[in-house]
Image (cartoon, rainbow, N blue to C red; front, top):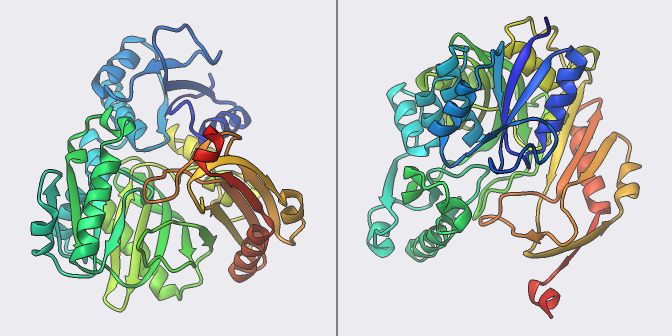
Length: 416
């Protein structure tokens, strides 16, 4: 009998098709559970179980009530990970606990767990949205970083260097949290803004798998662009890391302590951290794989994809050799330079001729409204590269990006 895996994902998620293709290669049966209208019968023709991401408990009941058996469960995204945890508990499938996933999602809870595990943490506090920002600013040190507790991908994260910038950032985050898209999910953490000391240093990401509480590192990514604010838009990831072996081991050790502090037990982990002379400072450890199409930046021996590794792990089968198939690989998440309406792009074919460039994928759709950080939550697309060294990969990504020219129209011009 083929292994049956339940995939909890958004209908608009980039990774759903990648997991479906990986399951087909492995000979697994993949059952989808996605957020869609329960009143329409199979609108996408994929026989997915209809979930409501704004009602996690009900979503878990729907899957449990379907009386289907699964060998494992995988989730793509933060909200799907929480629903997957609730489902896994009901069906007795090994996975992270709901409490652990919530701790990952909530920046305040995560900071408390990290501090309890004696990991380096900045001074942090949280303020309700109805707090007076001018009064709050008098109780913090500068520079500091303001963060909405429940958002991801650096959305709403703003650095403030003085009281005036603090007040402006506080009001801006309040407006972001008031958007209907966020209010719909009425999560408790959306009512608070966290403020913490700014951490100097270089930023890194670690991709891993946790098995019965033990972390296995799949890759460490360098983030070569300085992420100093006022916003923290991620762009380039390259692997393997160019850091000395000692620093890489410190990153791995810190990530392992962080996953233990969050009580993550079974499933993917995407961790982010900053490193400076004082050590490794954990930013977050999310109970999910790397987001968007970025998983394509990893290829293991014999061409195995990250999705295949995750599916095998969920099915409790050996993941196989986990060495990277190329000396170095990387991805660039193409940032949105300005707000407006996406009208098109030129130079894609030209960018693809750069030595080392593997693929240029534009995910923005014509007519789509674009918002840069801190309000935005998406990218224009992704550029992938491989090469003999991380330096060569980074250079190829930058050259390819320079060949692209995006046509973004002012929204008022479109309305006219």
